[in-house]
Image (cartoon, rainbow, N blue to C red; front, side, top):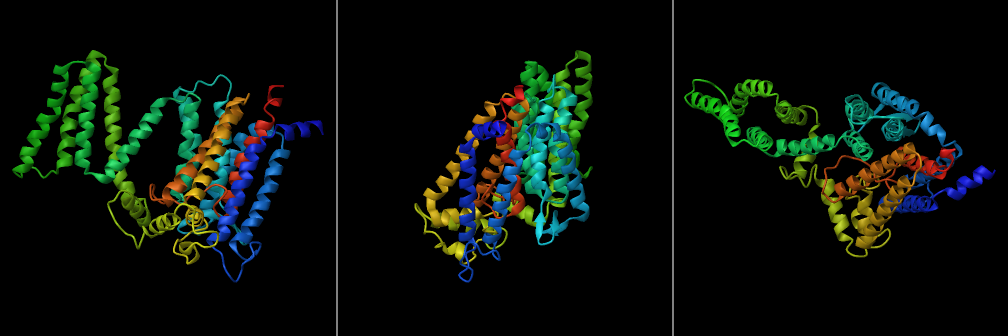
Length: 474
């Protein structure tokens, strides 16, 4: 009994209070988003707001169950839970139900369970378990491979479903690993790949290749500090490319601009390799690997965009980048969402008075676009309040993570912050047109049992670890 009292005494009730407030506000806004005059009671179980109440009550039961389990359970069984999550992700590909073009759900009677939501919890636990291993040297190749596997294996399986939005969430966990000493190279490479991705969609591949070659020659010049060698390295590409351009212009060879630049580079590479070998310049190998990887990545972006992404996903990316304009098609959701949020003004139209929401102008208004209901009915003050509540919760969780005495608890805490922040930032970003619509819920707000339960378990495991932070030293 005394131990139970200590846990309750050490529970961070500020975080619990913020969670309850966000869940309550979410429920109220789901009611406002799909209010029906024929079913005016918020407790009507035939409507989504009535069903959400059931999910909320079940989530509260789950939170209590999480607290009843010994805190050491989550560390001891972290890999086992991760294995179960991977098994479920594979199983759902074989036996899951397809909804909106993605085989992401198990159908259990009238209830649908999405295992990808719970895989986020398992991945945070497994990552925390590995990163807190005794005498771990995180910057070794073996450790890097293990970390990247823990993060990207569930992401890969979810991509196959395909559910690109949920798959992208796992990438944020790299920041958690970086917090624990993971090589900054992966962050730099990640940012560069992101830039290359958008450049590959916006400009011609020929220009990208020219930019990459120019960048590589600049790095070579900075690293070697020898202008003569840098000019010679440039001429090794320019002269063969110039000859090929001349032959192509006279129709001796049939080559496009991209192929000519690529072949010019191919002619120069053997000379670079010989020079690197003779002078024992290891950085040249790294530069060439970077160049080869970048060229391969830009080529693969075009292939993936045209052959892997579905047409509606391609349109969403093109609309975000300004390549296409489709206010009545793919861009309709975002356009109506922005109208709804903007029409709320400073104080909003009032509870249940949102016209955009009431007349169903905004699709998915109780799930992915629940934030537009807040904007229309509660205005700038309402949206600011919700954003501040989320930021307050995230800041509080960072504070809790920093005060942990256990590496496992601290790392898991940062995993919770990363997952919640990604959902919060991306969901709001896509409702106001800053980010593409990738279909991820707003934590504690969006309608749905799987997401609410997963976020609840994710948060309360950390609160349970925090409540036992003194015991872990004994």
